[in-house]
Amino acid sequence: MKAVGAHYLQLIRWDRPAGWLLLLWPTLSALWIAASGFPGWHLLTVFTLGTFLMRSAGCCLNDVADRDFDRHVKRTANRPVTSGAVSVKEALLLGAVLALAAFALVLTTNTVAVVWSFVALAVALVYPYAKRHVAMPQAVLGVAFSFGIPMAFAAVQGQVPLLAWLLLLGNLFWVLAYDTEYAMVDRDDDLKIGMKTSAITLGRFDIAAVMLSYGVYLLIWTLALASLSGLALNWAFALGVALAVAQALWHGWLIRHRERAGCFKAFRLNHWLGFAVFAGIATAYALP
Image 1 (cartoon, rainbow, N blue to C red):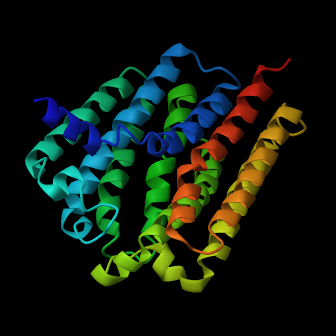
Image 2: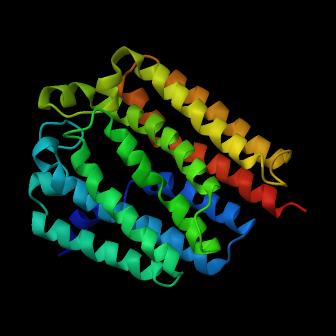
């Protein structure tokens, strides 16, 4: 029983929190922006737990969808579903339970957020299969990983304004940057099995595209939030963005030789970039 539990924890990437933190920071940033400050403990709890639960559910679905591909990739060959330690039925059941738990949390917010949660779920279900048909599946992942932003605005304001969609667009470019780094790790294996990724599609322009995507993400967020009083000239927000820029440049240095270790390290550390932006936003609203 203990071994089975360990396999379930491995399935939801319990030991790799970087994945759900990549979803958490833009979602919390949106909560603070929508509420013009601290959104309250209820919404903070709902979106923090909901982010963890939905990321875990997504891992279950992704591993089931990719089980025949993962066995041919060095980094993923020993995943629980691929190795047979967890059955397809068990993985889907666990994913469904986690998704329902996340939905139960959304039900404690408002009708608008509940409606948008179905759209978020649909995008999450599409992504694992996009890698078979879309040349840049990271763009689909970008929408899925950014949907906490309109959900946050819906929960706070009962609507999803233009600002939320601008922030989602910007965040999509951040996802494109870090998931291309991730795809660069497995490029050789993915080429052999016919998987479509941005690293393969971009070819020798991969590093340039990653750095451009970082720049577009930070530019869109900075310009979009500059229209909000209290953030445009706020030193805390500016410092958060500056720290994010510094980290993006460092990641560019890490991936410059396209080596697996450097690309994977850059990917894993991206949640600190998102935290820098969030910390700048939260601090800016906390200051008098």
